[in-house]
Image (cartoon, rainbow, N blue to C red):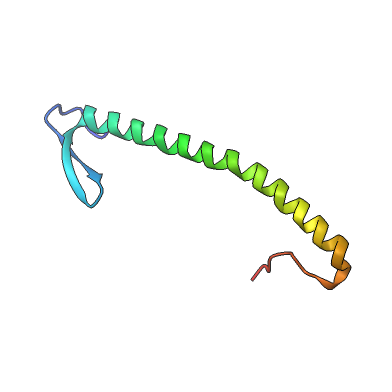
Length: 77
């Protein structure tokens, strides 16, 4: 932590406002926010795998039908 002063108030942003909390409260809130973001990230990453499988299957079907006449790869630009 930044300082060992018990009366130090830390501004913590909630939405568009900053609310002052004690150092311990701010640390707990940061840990909870980090845990929530990690859970959300894990949930989103778990949905990516099935979507990528469907995309690969669809690409295979389109390349089978149209051969080299179709370009489904994203541009690097």
